[in-house]
Image (cartoon, rainbow, N blue to C red; front, top):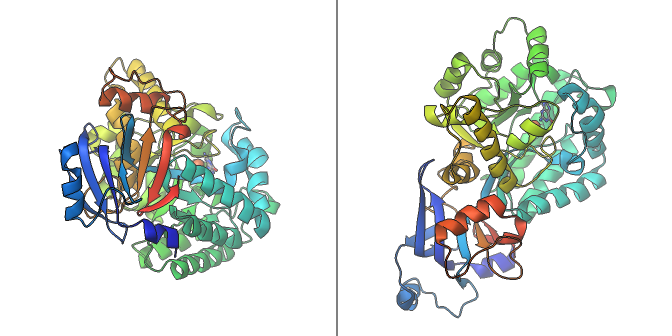
Length: 457
Ligand code: GUN
Ligand code: FE
């Protein structure tokens, strides 16, 4: 589809390459040589290739150093897997930063719904979604799990734009047929399901192999969906076991109380969503802040993933600290979400840092029983952890041979390298890596690749 991208492949990158191998451990290849084939997949990753051997290795792969598709990284530069944003509201792109301090229902009614309602206009949707996808790509988000608005047309436009711009994405028409204003609510359960099915068919038509874009079932939350909508979506999920599913889960006390009053037959949200067939290994549950032993057990047994959204959890109306250390300890899948616009920031780097701050608060509150996250763990959540949450770990999240090349070229030295202070002859690669996580921003992301295609340079 893209001539320039096709010309760029196969490509090779030589230099410092960093990726996660476990939640606790990163592998740092100081002299790595990574080669990407025409199909955007990683064909080889050689370790300890000395500078004097670069030409010999490249020639083995039919490449040579003068080719524009061969990149030799310099000191201060390194390659990492692309960031995965497991929870993101595309139609909230324009509201980031506003509406702080409101409780969830007031925030939805006063801040969010007026913004999302504008996406009834396809022209507005096209313009705003283009800015949104560009904005996330620029910040290194190579995979995003997007909630759309409730509109079928606008959600198709979002899927088109992700495909055009080359972002890997889950895209969902948001289901919501109650507890929302007349001007922004699905007309009925039937309508909600009909528009969803039509959107799924469209997404499969534009990207039949889900090479980049995958439709996702997106009940906003049980407060906004009646039993007919939830069971309709559950039926779609049963017929289409490959479809991912996303919703908000145990996010605020107010939301949990309203849910309980609407569905008194269910003690817990885990029971409610499971009853409707919406919890399985492809479910991405945003927030998961208030979780007891029972619900953690259900998530683990059903193999659901958690989208940890620390920026929104601590800076919107409520203040919540999700038990991420517990999730890691129990082997519950967990990744990061910007929750942009519930989160004011659209940066996964910010989400990593806030996950750290939240984990410090948890460590303090538990007198050290739940230790704070390390740099390696923050990085894991942003990459491989997110890939697992999205069931994409066979495709992305690390630089294993056979995976697709979703990567960020990071620079930490030079006039375009933002505010990181690298002490040139003294700092180690680990210093550079930690400084990037704690003080980096999009200026440090020099290039972004998705499936081998350069989408930011
Ligand atoms: N719960 C229901 N809808 C939303 C939303 O848009 N953002 C957040 N953070 N929580 C929600
Ligand atoms: Fe959200």
